[in-house]
Image (cartoon, rainbow over the protein chains, first blue to last red):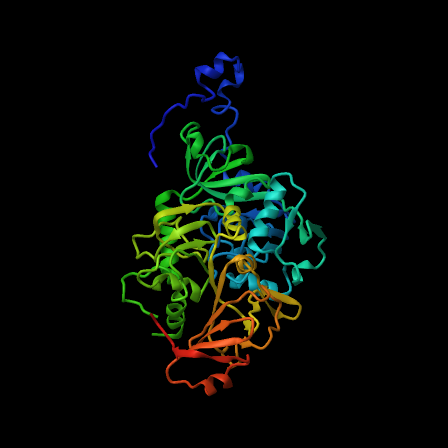
Length: 278
Length: 221
């Protein structure tokens, strides 16, 4: 990824900007717009009954330190917006939220990956609202991008029609799927600077990109926090304007170890070929 | 070889050279490990990858490289990574050719029901994930399933009883005992596993089917 630090041509502190009389705002990125926050400070904003969006996909590239703190906070009656209910087989990421019965309602595409979520749902203590995965993310996009809803061809003629407005556009029927927003969003990135600009790593964009836009207060958990200017503008995967808080997640070395252990434990990584055939 | 591996190996034979392929969670995921020689496909994962390869061994995995089943994968030359919205733009835009997925029920008309069974009265699960969008747009939909559920009931029905994921969307059904094609006229038995007769297969299959003139033994590649 190259850790070389260089000052971009239009860096806020560069001569170009100060020559145009940006005056006291010249160094806004360095001084006044420091979004780096502690998890303690973030948790002060989280209250019972809130709608909380959590990024990642099946527990991978997910803000697992934020989730851990949320589980320990005891905050309850949460409406959770998450693409699934966590790592297949459970016992990771979101699982404690269900075990602790902190979730009142889930808005997801699938809950079956999480035995903990299924158990609470079956007990009657949690409501679930399902949306097809691609429509689910578009609903969040509509919420974040100022649109009135999604005109969706998916689910016509199925039980997904229940309670939804239908429209006919150019002779074809569609469902109107309403926007989704949250009070707080927790997402995961690879690196972020103090202005909240986020850089991805590998398959980390997944749900995190669109979700960043759709919460009143979006928190990004990253493996590395860097100085403003270290992420080149064309490497910014989520513009800092969407981000309210940057928190330190697991450093890369720990990040690697956590997922290696998880994958070995759940049989998704085999120690040696032929050693462990089903 | 266990039944799951048999099904995965046989389903891999449905892959056509050059196809963009999406594999569901469970048995379908294993199909990636059995792609026949001479066939080059591009694997699509809903979570945002095109062109991934086989499962890595310990030490070769990357914590941020994974498929929709949250399993570690490898990236091939030419791989692309994108967000979920783009991923489903690829699906709804018709760029995924072949989908291989599991099911709760499938019927002789090619109806698929794999997202909602009653977990307890009035409560449905596990959810559709990306299945509704995948089956509505892919050119070829292959369903992989064990032939019967644990109590012996047939997974291949005359008519699905559960809420549908897609209507008339299935093209091929692969079980550990047989391979069927869904055609507008009828469900057609194309291949049958060694050690079982057509009569025995009918006895454990709820759906009505006809036997292909070129019926052959179950192929494993």
